[in-house]
Structures are given as structure tokens and as C-alpha cells.
Image (spheres, rainbow, N blue to C red):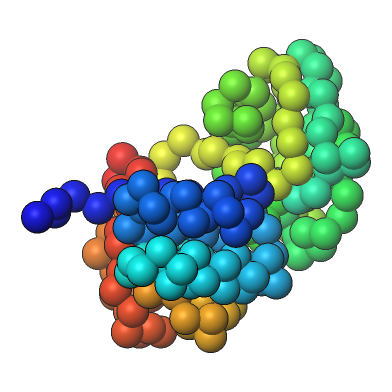
Amino acid sequence: MRRTKIVATIGPASREPEVLRQLVRVGMDVARLNFSHGNHEQHAETTERIRAAAEAEGRQVAVLQDLPGPKLRIGPLENDVVELTLGEHLMLSSGTETDEVGTAERMTVSWAGLADAVAAGDVLYLADGSIRLRVEVVRAGDGEIETVVEVGGTVASRQGLNVPGELSDLPTLPEEDLEDLRFGESIGVDLVALSFVRRPEDVTQVREHTRLPLIAKIEKPQ
């Protein structure tokens, strides 16, 4: 009996009914829904399609909800993509207006506490580490972080922002994740994956809100 399980991430192309049936047919055991992308309506529809495909093929397929986790992200950007140029200044706003549309001069950050967690001279990374920013001035009272671009490049809406070292005050279970968790249970997901787990307490905190099986993704050096 095959003990290894095949997990397939379902995206815009693979969520089509016929493609899902093919995936089930060739051995997909778990269908992963990445809640860092898409919206609740899309995930609900995809879950229904997965169930229908599994039933049509006569197989059991689990639905895995992958929560975004405590990852820092920038907000939406003008035209979804901006170019950051070496030597230019970029203001990061860590206030609560995360729907403000960002530009090459100013972007929002998902965590309001970032301005209290960094200092002048710190390095921040965007676009999976390909873009480097140096913090020049922090105005914690205003939630503003003034940076200079040391390595430029292209950044897209809602990409991750990396701060080297541990941010101990970064919430383990952001409110958005808790809302996603409740929604996932309402549409009948079978498993929940936790992103960027840093310590055992990260798992126990989520356990307080669900009895679904939890999968801890080990992605941080902590």
C-alpha cells in the first residue's frame, strides 16, 4: 500500500473541473488551497469542484487550507507592479490603512507594529530577498519608516517583506488568518497548514480555535 501522500496546490489553471479530475485520477491525495491568494468565494467554489472531481473518480481527496501566517506583506500597488531604483527613497507606512494603493515612493505594510520593531541602519528585503532597503529614519509615532533602495528591482502587490532576525511581537495568528480559519471550517476543509511556525506556542494558539488536524510548516530559522 502506498503510504506517501501527494499534495497538489490548486491554482487558477488547475482549478478547472476537468483538470481536477485528471489530478485525482493520477493520484492526488490532498488538494492545497493557498489562502495567501484568491478570495473566499473562489476558495469555496474550488472546494466544491474538488469534492465533485473526487466523487466522479471514486476517490477520497482531502482539502488542505494553507493559512498565510505571520508574514509581513506590502499592500496593493499601482498597476500591481512598481520598479524600485537604486538610491531612491521609499516610505513604508505601518499604519492600519493597508488598502492604500502604493507607489515607488510610498507603500503600506500589513503589520502596524513594524515601526516599533526596526531602527535606523536595519536592512529590509522585498521580492524574496532580491530587493534591499536600508532604514534611514523611523517615526514610530506616525508608523512611518523611511528607507533608501540599496538594490533595486521589480516588486508586486502584496509581496512579502523580510526583516532579518526574530520579530517576537509579530502576531502568531493575525486576525485575517482567524477569519480564514473560520471560513475554511464553514466550507469543510479537512486539514489546516500553519505558515512560518516559530515556536510550539504558535501551534497551541491555533489549536484553541479549531479541532481540525494541523500541519506545522517549518520555514523560519527560529
